[in-house]
Image (spheres, rainbow, N blue to C red):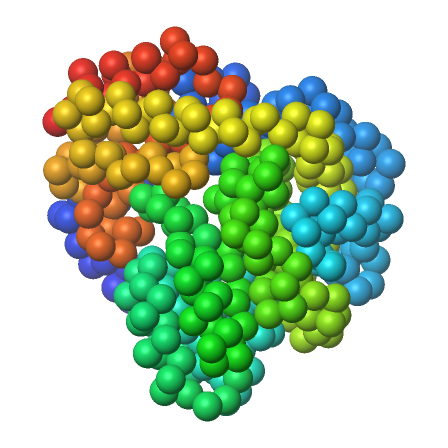
Length: 375
């Protein structure tokens, strides 16, 4: 029978406790949200939602075509200029998602005959970019500049290091300055996914590369998502103008995809302008993360010290993680649940989002619920 093998895989997932299900949420949920990536609490901010509505009224519901045909509006160009300026880069290119931005950057900058050095903890979108790229990929130990050096020494042609700046599972930061030094010794480029750094790290939330002095360098390309700190949708690639021009001409997820919807571009631009005006939101997100970590570890939980806004709490097993997250939900708290195969080390976790708009009382409530529901 066609697709009969799907039933066998489904049964295997069920036995392993790895079944995933969709859970539609209402427009207004009673749950305290520590599961989303709305780090700055901007997804429902009146200025951001009005930015979306205003753009939809002016430009229509959709982009109507690919960016090279009809899908580039003046609004897209405005967002690209302001995003590049804010993050400290020469140019930017907006795509329909952060996933598409990573595929575009990695595939376009790793042609046949090149080497891609990929951190073992990278996000799935970077991994898929490496799989689609025509260059050879070497996966190296997590956050290990010496492993990067060793891999680069095996290759004499063009090379690039691909890494998250902040890893989405445990919230730990990559050693960007050391990585840059290792790459520059061999003339290799850096492609850095700053999805979890933009809006949280750097001066006023300008991102992890900006924080360590890599923003604007001619050997650094950064991808970001507009769906986390900026509370919208979409992604972008930032870098030297010649690199961005190259992507316009060769990146398939840019050329052959419909442009980002105007409402998403409008809301992202409104959120970016709000962050410029209220840079303290970035520091507050980091403060909340530190408070969550301190209170959870004081209560006896095994939590990883956060470098940005992700707080990871170890669970005893995949089944235990699912049960723990479900009991948190029943007690009014939404938390993320990471388990194999989403986690590269096979360790299941609760994943908490430290939002800038959380009050002290909400932090106390979250810690109390996590403790009371612990398996």
